[in-house]
Image 1: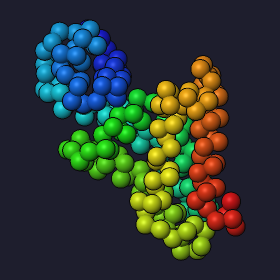
Image 2 (image 1 turned 90 degrees about the vertical axis):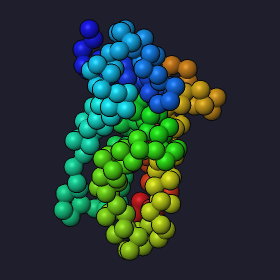
Image 3 (image 1 turned 45 degrees about the vertical axis):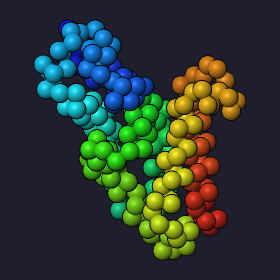
Length: 198
């Protein structure tokens, strides 16, 4: 019987690469190396298993994020937030793929992701963005317009076929991937901030 940690990690990979609908209970069991009733026996349903997978992956990430210290420079807060978001995407590509797939449709799963994880995460940086807009440090636009250039580029970090066709080397060390994530964060944040805050 695989350990709980392995069951959740392999589930994350399966949901990320197959999508929820194609990750049948039978296919999940095959990938886990268990009997066909394992998911229902242990979790009660595929939906409950998906939530357990998400909670294991995202709970740890959200737990590591703290609100900015009072008096922090807002431009630095945004820069650190975006850089950390891209670093997590490099360290947890299956999580990033799952979230990108789920965010494309209105489902109860996306509601779960947004209410428990995405919304609280964005709330950590939104006050800094609002203050930057109020002070002229960032162009005043609706929040969704600000978050699009932050979130959308992450697919270039984790979608290997596209990245390779755009010139990424075939095999890269983890440190090189992190350096690319940091370069992307700088490019994105510098584009968001006005000159005086860069």
